[in-house]
Length: 145
Image (cartoon, rainbow, N blue to C red; front, side, top):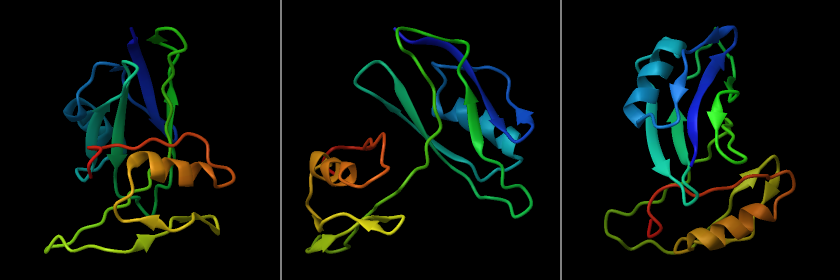
């Protein structure tokens, strides 16, 4: 099992230890203080391998462009790590449930092949992995949408 805690830093500022068992609300509280913002949004997604992903969004301040970094020295478990990755949100909607067609994801000038609006998580992951320089790709949220 994965356990222990990690530190989150932004520039020269750092949080107290954050437990690997922390809820979305716990992480939001810690990040709100670290980032001096009440506009932090956090959702927690449990992964298949007893881990968790906290998806975080927050407004970037024009006078504070620090990047979030993680110190996972205090995390325990076989090959356990905590990392910070950029988040790409792709959301489609239709008030009449009459969507059709395809979309592409373009990152650093590279484009996926057309992806159906009805694509499965696996199909989107396959397209993302075809792009150069793309490492870890994970899908968050319900598989059906």
